[in-house]
Length: 184
Image 1: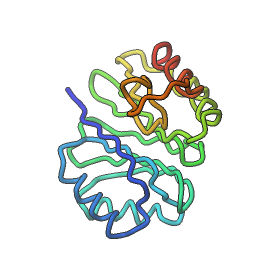
Image 2: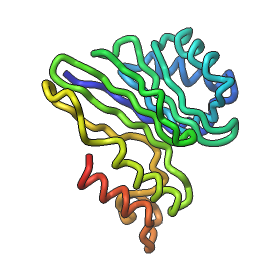
Image 3: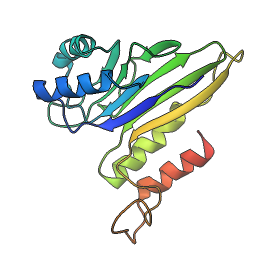
Image 4: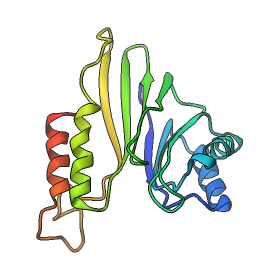
């Protein structure tokens, strides 16, 4: 079985016309889950945006709000998503992290959608919180897979991921690389 996931920084969905265009475009693709960053969603927007996602052809969605002009992450489920999707509504990283799990007969896929801070120090702190996300699973009758997606606001390889490349190392990048190699 395969799961098709797309991750997209939408740079704000406050404009209804843009939001409907994005939702309609995404709902007509062959993705199972859509992970959005920088939604600019507020608590007051959630119900309306969930309904608009469904009207445009989507299924369920979950949102972690930032402010009307920054942050915000979301996971949108499409109608063709295999398995049972369980949304985690406990994410409380101020519009920076949201999670869900997809349960299939043979595995559970734990998806974390991240929108990292612009500041290297703040990004490092966010990445240090990752150890709370991964690890001890109570159900050992199936395989567990951690999938980390999003906008990390840094590059893993400064020579190939940036043009022009940067000569300095980013403190957030070092912490992200550590978790990619040791935790996920």
